[in-house]
Image (cartoon, rainbow, N blue to C red):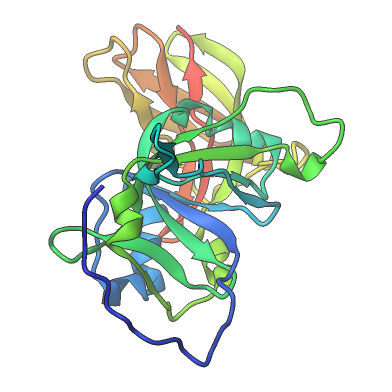
Length: 291
């Protein structure tokens, strides 16, 4: 705890309530921008849907958001004098407006340190400021839950537990911007999900995968002209320099793609992506190619 000087600042005539949280941008640590850039959809599209590897994702939380922050620690002496000795950093849980297939893609993020920007119902984006005055997300960690389906409170089936780390980011440096775009625009900028699975296991450098629209296994994803860039290797395993050499998409109408690999002698992980030449438009789960 520290001391500060209180300055009377009046009370405004507008007593509107704070808007509800309806989503978060979860970004890699070190994500920064100016307040002016934070108002532009292009700034966020470059984070969640670049042609290169994304450094963040928008998580819609319209199915619920709860503030689980602990009460301030107040101690009472043996003379009966009570005083506050610490303020806990906020802890929240938001319930994703996503499918279980989507939720499973976050399992590998469990306990990861990230930075979080809150998206409010009126479109306001809330974050904090770093020492350079840049607009950054609140520092915290995320946890997910591995569990059976809920018998009740079905809407709360996909929780994201966010444990913020620094109360001073909220107490001293909390700030917000009113962007020139809506929550709907954010959702539209997010890459759509694909599901990828191995159909014919890898053998003699060839593996066949099937790609469908996520959540709809009967809707194949058809590339206009699939090439190796659509199948980036996300984990090279124990291989020195593995590559996807060529793609046979003769059966793309069925969502089937035959990938020929080079330099692969142990298992790798790949992902399927597509773009419109400006932003990534589709992304699949990361899939193990077992050797």
